Length: 535
Ligand code: ATP
Ligand code: MG
Image 1 (cartoon, rainbow, N blue to C red):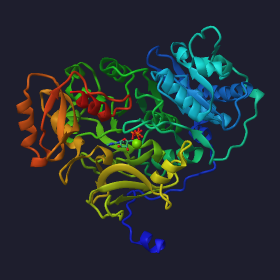
Image 2: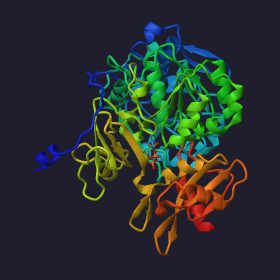
Image 3: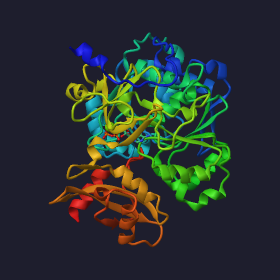
């Protein structure tokens, strides 16, 4: 029976004990619970202007925003779109929408008119908050009567966001909220297809944050004295999650509008940043760029990498540049609410961890590795699809019960689409995505493994591997390479061939100027496959 099937499964858990997680809080209540005790402490620093905002200010502004939303007619459960680059206003706006009991959907402000329109229609957006530079792309949304507010000077016909941030909080007494209500509607990155709207409830996010920040030995130890860099886009779940975690514990968030290596190093040095949530492209840039040695990075105690595979060699060369920092990984996915695994090197009482690991399964959750052929769960050290179960995972995809049912099965397991294994110390290792694995005859070639080898070459700045159709093998791996210095196609092929089994050898190398990547740090292999089909 189904029951017996369940019993025979290999289930993996955190090494940390489960904890009691309060589930009656709304997300903003939980995140700002200790704000009164941090009151005058700096919550946010705008790296552009140096302006600081205290915890008291952020909390008060969030409540004003909620009252202002009521005044604008925004009801409980309505969707508000934040179409913003990283800016200090993002924080109280996101929290204010949540205090109102409305739902924030976040989008990349560089999206086109069509992309924004699509997300606004699918989510039935009732209000958009953006910058004046982007209002033109919102013309038809505005024409339909959806108010558009701007955080800078409002163009004619638009209102300034001060109608929210300077509203009278006493106009609206807070309402009670059901923790199962949706609070955020982030979109997946669209790496493998179209971005998918993901419904996350107050409870999902509270649990996901608590899994890291609570307990006698928090898995992710951020202290009130910590200064956390916020350079990754807040419209993506990784950065959003880190902002929520930082505020929960009273740390200071330094917000950078966009990533530029020199600026980033300067901000880390000048603000004595202690924690840096990064993605592999930033790790790569810091590892390979000589300007790093011109800056004092000694304040950084914890470097985090997530969102895409980080090669072991790259991890080593990066560590050599920041010898005093803990360099490790976490593993997230929008649908997972968002965290699946976190390195125990970041714990208050850390555990030893291995290079290349993306952490240990979050506490209060279960994981299994499933054979793609048979669907049965596998023991330690065997490759299969990573699955997770727990109260933090999404309520479902927006308007798409079919995809939801394909992703979260009837037993509550979220199937990630990532191939990996869990080793004898319960550490999670990701090999690649199921969809990206190249199939050479019966053999499997994970592009991430070849990319890791390629970027370990001193003359290679960056690389991506994709499949090319082949009459004999079905598919063969080929590479796009960005050079740092002179190196030939044959030299590169040989460099790889010496390190891999025959079926993983590169069949061709194309030299290129840059590897296409999404703002959330993923290689856009689908774009490279198109480039290849045009060659
Ligand atoms: P889409 O689902 O729209 O194709 P996406 O999967 O890239 O896009 P996200 O939810 O932003 O959207 O990313 C989740 C994915 O990122 C994971 O499924 C995994 O493939 C990858 N990822 C996250 N953390 C890591 C990590 N530490 N190492 C390797 N890959 C990671
Ligand atoms: Mg995905």
